[in-house]
Image 1 (cartoon, helix red, strand yellow):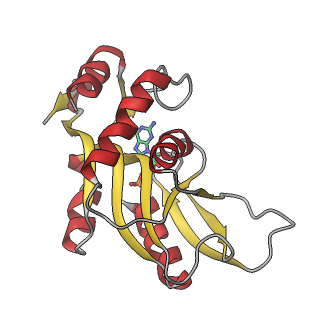
Image 2: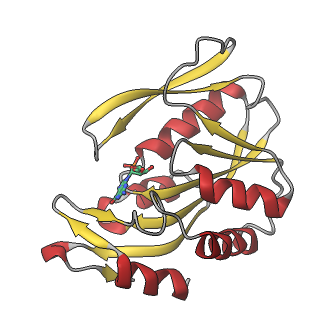
Length: 188
Ligand code: 5GP
């Protein structure tokens, strides 16, 4: 997606450890016009898939996911990183975050991720694929199927995309970063 790649090159910032900061337009301050274009592109790429729900993980997946859900007129579910005291009947998995170097629980109610669901998972970044693996586990526990996974930005050098594709998962990434070596953004 050219407009996204141009924006990453213009406004993205590199941090040591292979971190790309896009907080001026994606995950802190958000550009809704760009976010709409991102959602239109996801809808185009997954048009052939039979989907009944969009799913993501809080917090930065919510904005693109709700735009996609709006366009598809489908419900959007976000898995939570903290178990709400009122949430019963829930599915839980553990996810390792390399950006924060910790492992946290991710949970979703069985009421909203159910047997027979065919979900589209949307997230801002794909790095090592740990968040995606957590979502695969939650879907398996629920008896739901993942129809595809859409990421705004995939960092190819962390190989989560290779891992997911080798599992047979349909993965669509709108911008693929080859390298952030020497704090230079190289996009495929
Ligand atoms: P993974 O689970 O694929 O290793 O990492 C994906 C998650 O970590 C994303 O949901 C995102 O929140 C965060 N993340 C991974 N890499 C980056 C990055 O370079 N920049 C930012 N801002 N977040 C990242």
